[in-house]
Image 1: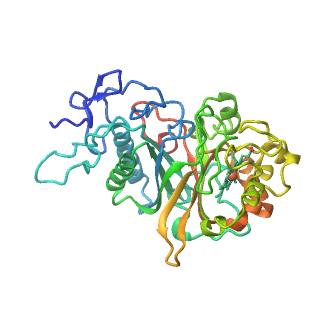
Image 2: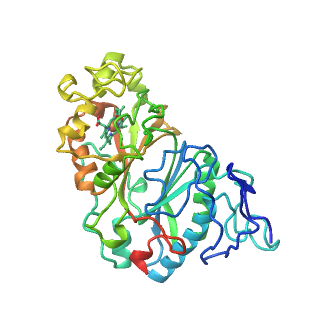
Image 3: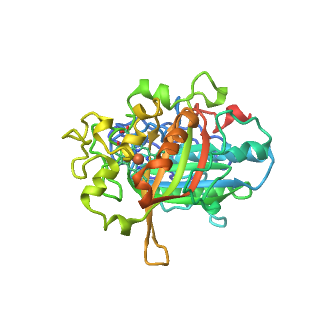
Amino acid sequence: MPDLSRRRLLTGAGIAVGAGAAAVAGAGLVRQAQPAPVQADAPGGAIPFHGAHQAGIATPVQDRLHFAAFDLSTDSREKVVAMLKAWTAAAVRLTAAQEVGGGATGAELAPPDDTGEAIGLPASRLTLTVGFGPSFFDKLKLPRPDRLKELPHFPADKLDPARSGGDLCVQACADDPQVAVHAVRNLVRIGFGTASVRWSQLGFGKTSSTTPDAQTPRNLMGFKDGTNNIAGTDHKELDEHVWVGDEGPEWMRGGSYLVARRIRMHIETWDRTSLKEQEDIFGRTKREGAPYGGTREHDPVVLDRMPIDSHVRLANPAALGGATILRRGYSFTDGSDGLGRLDAGLFFLAYQRDPEKGFIPIQRALAAKDTLNEYIQHVGSGVFACPGGVRPGAFWGQGLLA
Ligand SMILES: C=CC1=C(C)c2cc3[nH]c(cc4nc(cc5[nH]c(cc1n2)c(C)c5CCC(=O)O)C(CCC(=O)O)=C4C)c(C)c3C=C
Ligand SMILES: [Fe+2]
């Protein structure tokens, strides 16, 4: 049997993985040594796959994203269960820097189970998070959670169906883009015949942080983005606004609803806008990120010091009866659009306990009035129910499908 570990030693804890771990290739579940939990902000380390919540939601935000939305090519629950079992087995290995199935260099006369481009790379804090779209429930004739509804149309939406929807999604985040791309590519291979990619999005330069003490990243408009976000360590806020509780359904407990929006930025127009106007649009200063009326980034937001139609004034929970989301977006550039303009923007990802109390009221307010709208356009959209965390030996969506 080949050495299936990408790196024999994971983290300073020096736990050996791979060759010694008993893994079952293909659809079978894997029983193996789990990597020791590492400091979540340690570069290269492994984030545990199992837990009360799926990793990749409150987890400190990694540098890179590969997001993929899939359509089912079957209405057979058995086939979907087999795929989710195989995906889970692969995800356990991928997030521990191990090759999937029989590895990248198994039997000579068959295509290898693992595509191989991550050989030698560390886990890179890879997280894999799965969600089910409304159409998943319709296709498989399963009861849909009350809170999982198609999003309403918002004024100025220009959604491309080819970049919207999807029966299920996988969010892969890692500090190394090759690790994230490898993970999604291998899941796509495993899903062949059961699910195929409908659309996908690569992202870089996280635009929001869940670690408030870290330096706040900047978006492509040059502003600090994520200042007033929920901290991944703030369990009270997470329980109140992000994690599904007793309201269920049972399989959604500890899970969350994800809204994904591909938001194009009209970068060229933005770059011709005065600094004063740019700052008025957000209600924050560009260099420091301070709210109008304050001097430091984390000074409190005082709504009536900001222009009435500024982004932060409109989106702040105090203006919206407490509506709160966990933001986890990434910048993207997908080359130019054929008209000499950069196809760039924000791939906005928001997690919440109930979209009707999170994304929807905030986006209604923004779509109606935000002065930022002149510089952006929502061109892709998806909403997904991300189940609670996976127990060792279980598989993604087991509570729903088993
Ligand atoms: C519906 C939700 C939101 C969308 C869509 C959205 C798009 C969007 N945002 C920025 C840049 C910034 N947003 C900032 C704050 C902020 N934005 C939202 C929600 C949406 N943004 C919220 C809830 C907040 C926090 C408001 C508060 O409580 O103060 C900021 C300021 C810094 C920060 O707190 O993060 C920036 C900058 C862009 C560029 C964009 C679409 C392309
Ligand atoms: Fe925003």
